[in-house]
Image (cartoon, rainbow, N blue to C red):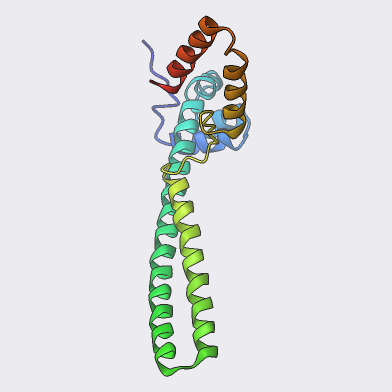
Length: 173
């Protein structure tokens, strides 16, 4: 099976970069002394996979960098929160109510910022699932509808029992 001469070229990375940037195939072929047909085949068959892998690697690197930054901010916020709590204890011990209230406010703002960063970290790490869920067995409207159906079926014992069995099956027991 013939090997792609463009893939085997010592300047392949530069060839790929130029093709990805939109430089004409003929121009790339001439510049690197490769046949236009080889550059064309390479662009159609090998370059998309290379670009996809490079894009994925870049996205992973950006995600890792973002996670690192969020973790660093969390560490800084922990230090700020610890300092705010220390100041709060000190001014509270001195009986300075105005400064105590300011220290409480600062500690609260720092704690809130830390929680936001932790939430972001959870989202980035894929550990926080924010998709909405519906629990029909706790939903008040469902409970009302269920009660109305069971009440309406009281004159019909067989149907009432069949619905109760079906509802137990839905409830998992």
